[in-house]
Length: 87
Image (cartoon, rainbow, N blue to C red; front, side, top):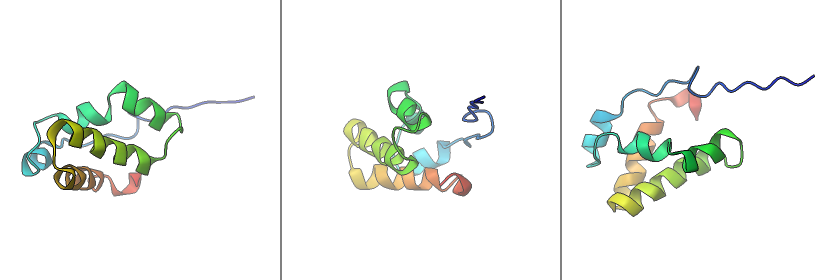
């Protein structure tokens, strides 16, 4: 017998990133829209990419859209630090 449980979004709740996005010059909602886009999220929640690979890809997607790799990487790092237990 096999039991599959998907706890993402049920137990893990992401705090609002509005102040963080503003501090890094990103539009409100940019982090969530990028990180939780189905094409980006699906590989992460199915184990095809690691959490670190997912976060790095989110930073790369943000850079493609909003420029400044340093700024978007800093935003993703600060966002990741909101949930230290998830890292």
